[in-house]
Image (cartoon, rainbow over all chains, first blue to last red; front, side, top):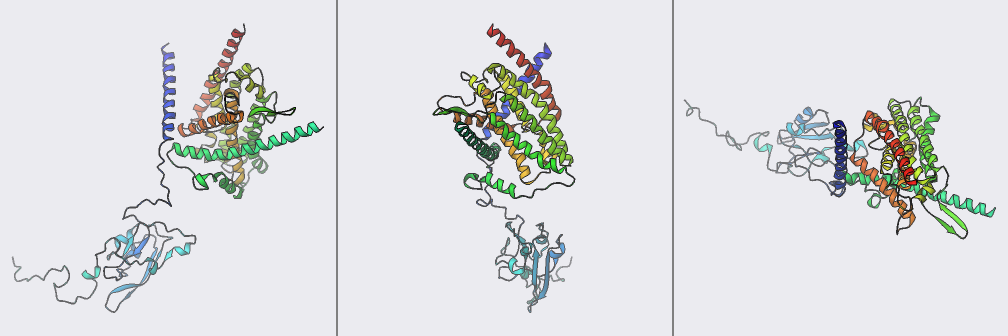
Length: 184
Length: 331
């Protein structure tokens, strides 16, 4: 008798739970879809999302890149290549600079390695092409006319060029310490 | 002679209409299912091809027809090529005996709204759904693939098991209607649909029929997270399309069978018979899609347990009780 009641109770419980499940899905039928319609609506991505790479310029409009090869060296898929050169004023630059986006894995290591904040990743991820060869970007494709994530930074104000003034005249450089007055 | 020719032309016209209607309905059922399922999961579903995505079935058909038709190495070629046709053809053929409206009388011609009013229509339905098993089992076997074979074996076991309760659930209906003919079964429900007097038979029939169509929660033959795609893993292009078509035509046919056996077929107040029939079919189909959005897949032992230990005994009991009550009422 007890067993029979258990069976009936279990059956009733199963049916009730089944009905609850059906009710839940039915309610969802009238909920607003949460789909974002991609080409019409583009979700604003965080500023630091890692997608297409750019080469930025410093506030004076000069290229930031000093062709130090650090990005090329750190790149795990070796998709960055360049040829360095030196301007008459002693400033280094890249003769040519090439990123193969067909290989790039958007890891952002180049951006981390860059001492001059020249190479930066942007949230622009729509880089699809039908022909794989068109994914190879040259310097003129990569170079933009703004400072990217940090507009004010200028590496050459701090380093990389021959100092013109005397010691302690450079930007943010401390005055030389007079060792006579520095005695314990 | 002229009467014969006119009858033949009318038959051909009906055949064409039913075939086109059925295929169109099946194609848009795929679309409706994708849309509804999406809304059940608070998504949008297909909405790109044409307004509201209404051209999606067309796009799907074009895609399937232009795809490569791959036959695997060492597959049993003849059976492999033949199996999808069995599934699609049996599904389409079942609809031949389904009455979808009241007969028309034009002049002295009586045009019944059914392709063929067989006096053993119900047996014909059961026989054809049995043949459908062959398409699944042979398709799985001929593919020369483990997944397809497993799916085919599961399909055969499941469909044969549930055929039993499917047939037994219909016995009380035949007892009440006193006929195997689908037209007369509908006519017998002129006062009340059999659902009211046979809710248990309705439940058993519906569950077994969903199992026969291999839909969630009984989709073990094609369980995608275990068997890739089950018995049609190796099929591509329009041959896969035929399996797909067969499945959705079976859905429509199942909806119309439930409507004919338990919901009173085309009969209903106010609206024209064809509309009533259509509405009933769509209601059943909607419930099946809703079920797909709600229930998880059964385990294999649960499936066999439900079929053999619950549905078959219940169906037998239902027959005995129905017979007893009928005897009592007659006495």
